[in-house]
Length: 178
Image 1: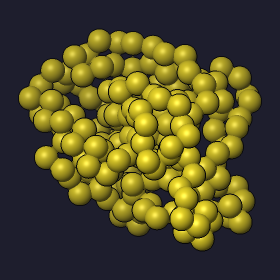
Image 2 (image 1 turned 120 degrees about the vertical axis):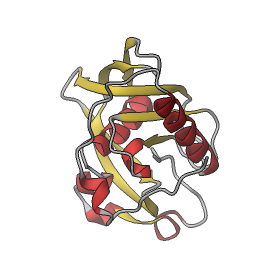
Image 3 (image 1 turned 90 degrees about the vertical axis):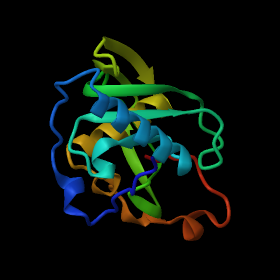
Image 4 (image 1 turned 90 degrees about the horizontal axis):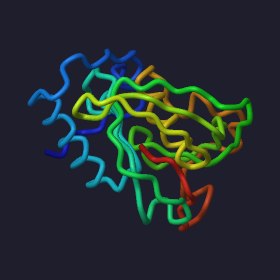
């Protein structure tokens, strides 16, 4: 089922989400299917449970070729529950980000370039990945939602934050849209 995505200004987006404790439940399976349906409907690269009003530490992400970020490399479809992120260096890179909860806007956001993330899949199996670049950006963006952080809170220079049409004209720049 396609769910309504909460928009910036809704206080539910500012809460810290709770850990999942019941893996393999019908409720978790239904949540994940709704998240997949919603993300696909909106051509997003990711979605966090808090964005649809569910206060759990669950994110999904992944993209192949997508018109919203045509130059981005593929990111594997991933369910990440109760994630932990560890930067592998202090090196950051900046890039354009957008968000389904902040529609029509983009911002220039710093993120760790190299990252290891661990967490659980939908069956409760623990896994780990070491990633960089766009993949690392997407994971950080989605996991920020679990701590009540929206990407505009990370923008350092508001001259590089604005409406897509004003920033880019008719083209859409690469972005980590959640």
